[in-house]
Image (cartoon, rainbow, N blue to C red; front, side):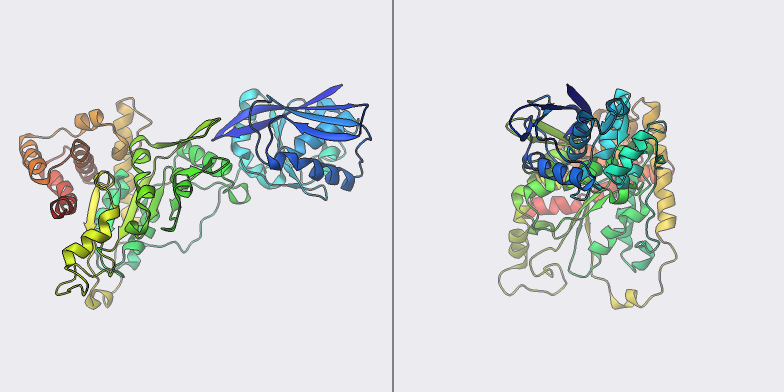
Length: 512
């Protein structure tokens, strides 16, 4: 007799159904696991053997064959331990086979028979719900699985013995509850930054429209402090965004305690990060920082210190909102609609733009050009706001804290985002959540200019040598500035402010 247990295999954020088939027959004493499994799957034999022994069961002295079907689908991870163990228990009569018929099962086994957390439980729960199954998962992952559906049957035991007792009716396990993670109360606040009013204004515009932003200034000017406070003014994730973000973090194993958060992701990789770490990859094609920053912020500090090839790998995800990782036997696509915030010094010493400073090695302009050579024009063209952050004077630091903090700015940002949602919902485009994500055709429609604005844009395009991408990004930026003022028509004043944030890019092109 063959016992069948349902589980899943992960391809990106998709959970593919897998059938764990267990057969115990006469013959040589062997425990074989087949079905294109990786090293973790092969090692499950020893974990299952030890966990069953710790639970008071011994493997029969027979030929045990476990097949993970379909056999041509790669199987990776340790979450096959629990379905394999339950299949063996059902095959030897220690557990009623029909008790597991309508469940998708995953979990890793410790040697003492306890069930330990695994990655991807939320994706598995969604797949189980789509198949009309319940879910059996580790206790720590239960709150995560509960987000899939309110009526999804979930069993979240801590050990094999507890699960057996539940199936036999001697112990009843309570269904876990979905939980939101509580954020610390001492979050960074804009009120802590003194001076830098221009940079704060740019940060507010970037938050309101989801625009990419580059801070350029000397060391200690507050660039990193400003970027770290961007999450405090961003609106919380809506339910659709929360599910998308949580799926990626679930597959990556980044959901602490199975709880979700509606706070937008903020990822800040070190400048030594490799291309695989940033865009994803490796043997298991795991999501990288760009995918983990989906619907959130990717902050790259010390931008020119990143490898040039790593930075240029961001160009396609910025445009398409997704990243595709191709391997010889499969191709995985992760959503990656992130907001890029970058910070950099003007040169290696950081003071080339200071009044009266002269580099001891070479002219200031050449020092800056060499340091910024890693930043390609196509990448800089995808950044909407280029802001020079001047050093903060001691007189500003001695002033009292500003009256306006993150709460007041966040309220204006939320209202601007609400205006954008209503606008794109009216156009039957609910997938567009901000002006930065709007296609060129749509932004030309929603940011139509009057005659004065058209004349200004035409003249500025020639003077600043705007590319077609830059042209539309200026329109998006002007549309956001108008939304911060209440969502009226885009005027020449809005357009002039948007163009002012592209001036630094024009200067770089002229210097080059």
